[in-house]
Image 1 (cartoon, helix red, strand yellow):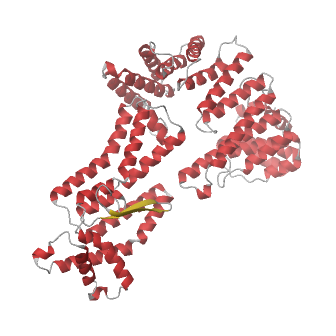
Image 2 (tube, rainbow, N blue to C red; image 1 turned 90 degrees about the vertical axis):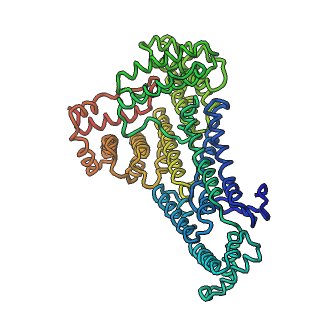
Image 3 (cartoon, helix red, strand yellow; image 1 turned 120 degrees about the vertical axis):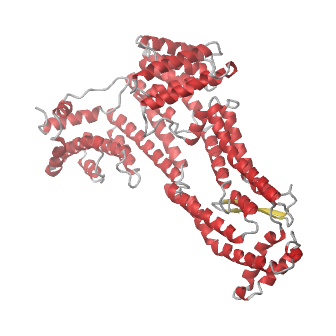
Length: 625
């Protein structure tokens, strides 16, 4: 506005919706108006797309999660503001170019925009868009009055001499004279003076400015369409051309690229081969881009474990990528991914172990993103490494993996960090260090509690997505607490275990009792209480009303209720549990009656207490021959 010569500029903010800049310039040309409107969304759009391009091409390292969320917000908000909907900046551009002297059509255009916003609000269930639509609907009477006055002014101008009627722009005094002259007509007699003054003031800028000519209108629309399509083209370019473009955009939208309901292995394989054919046509100078395409295709092929040709193709692609990156520095991320892929697709366990040990030796002293690959490989070697490695070596590998995960974590509830701690806890417990193992499980609980406290309350969530993310954090915390409670029950801390399991169940969100995490927390609480022999605690757990269980949880819940019925001597509950267990197949009965396996190895899940109680209750109920 300052560049275009506008006067009395100011900015005011609308809570929950955004901000608006205002200014005055009676003789602003149509193209100046277009420039002012586009100066709203375009800088943010270019900033967001430019930052994504820098990450996609590897010019800057991968930023933390909050930065990616900020880039997504910047991209979406400014792209939305560019849409041709009144009163967004894109809508103002279209109004000024196409409907400058057509007030009725301008109102119809505004109504169409509101209808589109309303449809978007209904389809997306986004509360912010719904509120925005409601606010705009409240302004319809005002727009109707401005349209009435403008049409009346234009009708009056048609009665003036041609030279006077076509004068544009006119002075502020002439515009005021025309507006208030028309307001003296009988059609506006019922309007109070305050309304007349407000409507006339809103109409003055339009009366003082001139309508665009054909050349200006075409030029303005061309500029607008270019601005509208430029971000889309740039994002598509990042997706197709940037070496890390697909990963960046996938992380940006938090979308699983391969979770498609219409998944057909042959069709997916054909799509991958088409991308690989394009990669093979790239010039030698684009080797980094070709390697990235090879690696991405190999990762997709590894996920196709239901399609035999995919594994062999993935193995060949990893070997090709290794041939192109082997001579690079050991800290090169593509080189590390290629070597890791060769290990994951090796023919024998010995070959896989040798390749992983080579990768550990290469990456031991490097810094940067390649350390994440080192953490992943160390985790695998700790559990599936050479059989002659000692317990101390296993622990050293997992400790190093956890330290790397902690240093690289974007948030305390980072998924990879949480699972690395659980693996370390299993190793520590199996090697005779239960206190250290419990400290790792407790660290997960504390981290998830902190993440949950930082998340917005569901009742005050800005969007449905933020409410869903909060629920996910609650379920993650419930799972961590349940695992910790089972660990304590296995190690004789039954009082603290049952209290923690009960606390986990109390976190169940409304209408989410059927979620697997809710069912698992409740079953753990009930089994620990049964193991304690605490009848009051068992009754309290049974009183927790859960909906009809999912199919995968039905047998487990019936087994827990059978054991509870035996402890409480409750015939009604026993009959209810037996009714669910007796129709089971012979194979299920054999599995139910088999002596429980005591898991004290590296893959312990700390459910030995539950297995023992299940076996004892089945024996006591006569379910076993």
